[in-house]
Amino acid sequence: MAEPNDELEQVRKTSERAALAVLVGTRGTSPRKEGAHMWVGEGGGILGSVTIGGCVDAEVVKASDAVLRTASQQLLSVELGDEDAHALGLTCAGTLDVLVRATDLAGDDALVRAYERVRDHTRTGGRAVLVLPLPAAGPVAPPSDRVLVVDESGSTWGTLGTDALDREATALAAERLTRGGSRTHTLAGPLDAFFEVHGRGPLLVIVGGGAIATPLAAMSKTLGLYVVIVEGRDRFADAARFPEAHEVRAGMPSEIVAGLDFDGTSAIVLVAHDYKYDLPALKAALQTDAGYIGMLGSRRRADSVLQMLRDDGIAEASLARIRTPIGLDLGGQSASEIALSILAEVVAVRNRRSGGSLRDRAGPGAAGRTAATTT
Image 1 (cartoon, helix red, strand yellow):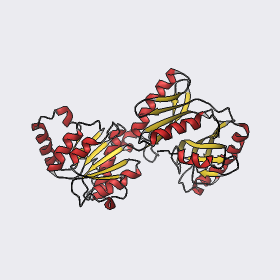
Image 2: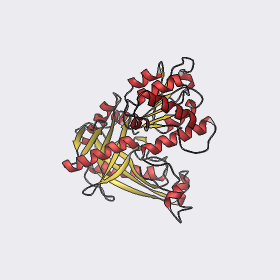
Image 3: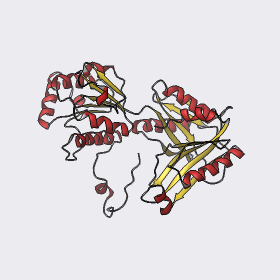
Image 4: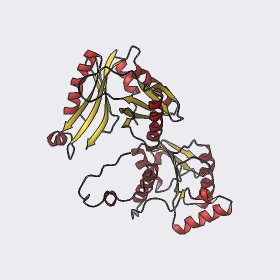
């Protein structure tokens, strides 16, 4: 999740005008993800990076000087040859698209106001997408004062110019919040726009603090998830055991789950492997809007738990939401391998994929090619 607001405040301390460079597209191999930022102050100060240094950032700094002189913007398309790619630690060449835009940090700048709007919303735990129209690649152009902010409730601030564009962008912003990750999309017009995701990552609640919970929390954080450990036993609800978790909560799991705020991007994973926790927690989970509900256990145990819930009057349509046995079939046996299997399924479900082999999906002749996915 991109969080440039702290950087913006730092730049404001030394400059009234600055160029903002944003990595808005990658093709081939890239050392950074879309949404990476660099600020170049009017006095030459640099904060952040769109890659990991080297020729790309040097070209961005040069373009920043130009857009600051002309109060403009430019979309750079930087080709990385094999030699440049290897210098950046990459295995193959690629192309980076970087938006470089002059910003007035002291005046009435639409993009700065949009970032401030995002900052105010995310500071209270919210999530939002900033939608920024992109110019055509090539020469410098006047900066657009059109920008749209969409939060997780669907509320908007600003405009892309027409109601039709705003509606289309709002729908795509909701999809980005569900899938995660900043991306460039082409809207009707056609208009390319960068959708920059801000705020806390999707919620993952892990019920149970046993052996699998530890690698599960660690891997989840690397995926940008907001990890909450829920444990009914005080000795296992020790924050020191889960340094990667954002929260560790002790108490009755079903009550804690019932008190959390879930949406379609959220996941609930039960790894306690204890009937007295699993059954009430599953009942509570089924009352939420969580997009993924899974429980660790063998097929026999899964059937037993589902039958108990069925006997308690839980409808079949609700029971179908529970994924148990949990995870994709990776054949793993260790706690880390099982955690990987679980997270693989969480990601697949969020992206509405089956989790099958990309090689098999790609069809004949695909072996040896680099698979590219769009999310």
